[in-house]
Length: 227
Image (cartoon, rainbow, N blue to C red; front, top):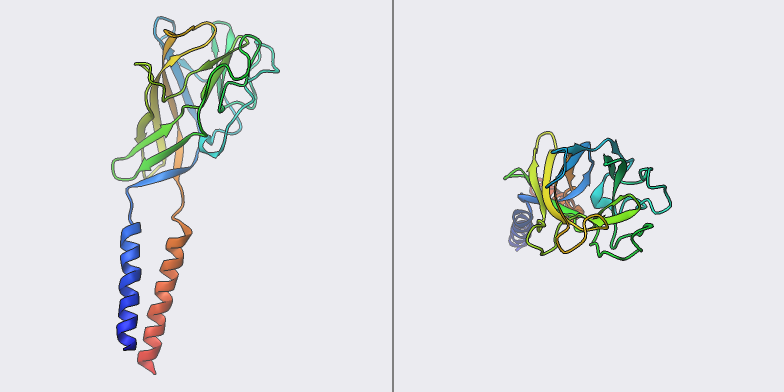
């Protein structure tokens, strides 16, 4: 009877583990940005690279940046995600649930989105992200330039490649960027690139607990046999 109970418990544990591992897709647990930039249709140069990357670029860890509302138009946001020069003024990127406001754009003018989230596919070698909360601030005005808007141009999600061995990723998306110098509904059509390192969320604690419990069960069975 004891052997039947032990066998049933073993089968249950093995069934649970087989349903939870291995998985192909994992949530992003941590990421950084090491490079990136943008090209905008109808403007030169063809690609403008970031010339500043902020101290925190783990996009999935929470909203980042102040939006530069208290800064001069000629200053980049030191707490922002990244910055680059655009026609004599810096563009600073930040994330928020709505635009944080600047001289030309009152706070809340544009709706953003939730804290960025994404997934890594360990089989396909891809990365996918919701960047609907991404904004840029330029020349005292805010611009919504993330993903997820149904306007015929903006990408539903940012997508790209991810290397399982090195954790390196390259991410792309298109945006109908809307702001003071790119008024809606036409806006400016921009094409974004991010590069860096991204790692998956660690294996859930529950799986480790079941694994350790399984090992303990094997030990108990072995001791009974010895006795």
